[in-house]
Length: 320
Image (cartoon, rainbow, N blue to C red):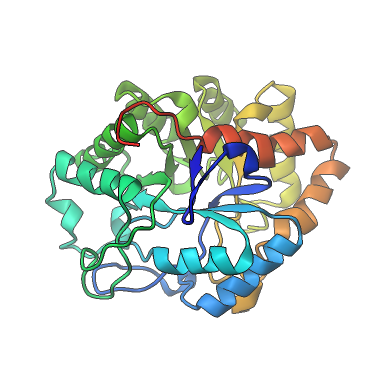
């Protein structure tokens, strides 16, 4: 089972899935988001998502968490209007995305855990420009998003990771993380596992920003999922370099550890005047993968079957 913004569904019904993306990101008084990542026009985002559907896309995980510009009501509307299944996130992003007095800085582990669980079980908070706790909805989150920055697992981030692990143990939903330029992914995985999270319920994102195959394979051996989204991001590397790393992962026997997304921003959505579009993986990247020797069955594994496992709710606790 997976939990979308509309209903719970069988994970076998996910289809082609982007495991790490952003559809709506809004500015608020309590967040601190750069303009380049804002996606605040529902009409434009809907246009982009409809195009994704037209080209065969079926599911998107929106990983904008609590207080970081998430608009879960808009996500439900976009899902209903486009026919694309959307999984929303609870959780907390890196500190840079919040103002210095944000609630989580002083909150205790159990307070944070309670918010995460409540958003999964009962319904997430609606977007409000002034108060992230102002209004509740009955739209439920289906994954927990957490992050570290260049400082790694500081005391603050350990608090957030402990809360995420506790919420996972109660609800069984998966945890997806942000790594800053591929750093601290192994530390993140080890900390979560030490706190009772199954490796199969952990997705470590952005491990392809720096193409260090030894680090990537080391993390894959732990049994977590690695999310790759440095696609059409040429300031880091080209698509061919990305594909050759994926091919190496396939050759080493780790094709079942890879999932993908576009990690979209305002600069990437065509509907906002961006440079590649939500359909880039389907239209451009998959043909390049095939040209460089990655087989159709391996592509389906990465984009369809691995997400089924990575996003499946494992009923570890009793909350669901």
